[in-house]
Image (cartoon, rainbow, N blue to C red):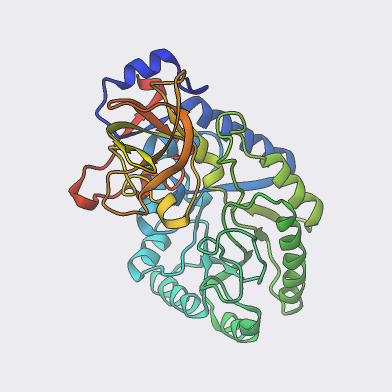
Length: 387
């Protein structure tokens, strides 16, 4: 039996049609509290990245916990406002902010636009002028720092599409000098996701110091330094090591990035806040016995959780219905794609038709990326404090 799912809860699961996302709200609350403690201890302001999970109950828990917001679209800004985040606590990221989104953000009086390219800065300046407003912006810099993570989720290398690289700085300053409707707030960085080696953040801090000094020399001092997100979680031991090292992250930044008078450090965690509170509960549809392999075929698939197919990501899988009798088998999804596999040669409880399985660490980039491929229904959310 799972350490996070009791016998009584398992019985309750039978009342729900599978698959569904199960959220342990105590785990979420405790995780939010740990981040809130770390940000207060080290005087670092955390903004939750809504792209990781946009369920309203999740967002309300995070906003009530004293965490600010980072949004990547206009609709995320709208959702943040609806779930308790104040405009002054909202940052707007994203490489392709549309005109409509920029105007909405300006009218909503959000705290800051984290700008990805020079043309974007010019457009925001133009729109702010039309509205008679001053737009607060930070420049997202591409620091050319390797996050040592999967190539699809690294964002801080020179060849990536994100941020403004050092070779364009001189032109950037010329444009900033002409933009009278902008307030320069500082610098923004984000080098990738699922970073488990904190020394990567030490390297980033050194680059931030160098780049900040260059901007200072040009007359653009930073009231805010934003190091983005990226803190990883333990996908291998989600039931015993579910709390991310927020204290370690904030300590590393504090030790390696000295701040000036009146300056504020920001971070933008997403995955680390929500990954371990979420689980997919799915049922075995069929058992297929092959000559070389045995398959437990679930009623969820890559349309429910795309990370294994897209990133070859590992998620712990558990047979909740059978724990004593052991077997070795593959756990696969219901989609007609060979990449729709959740576990290969898994050693676990022997599967039977109708068994309930849990796919752990599914709170981040799970339900928010759920889709209706093959016209299947979207998997709903079930919350631990509502059953």
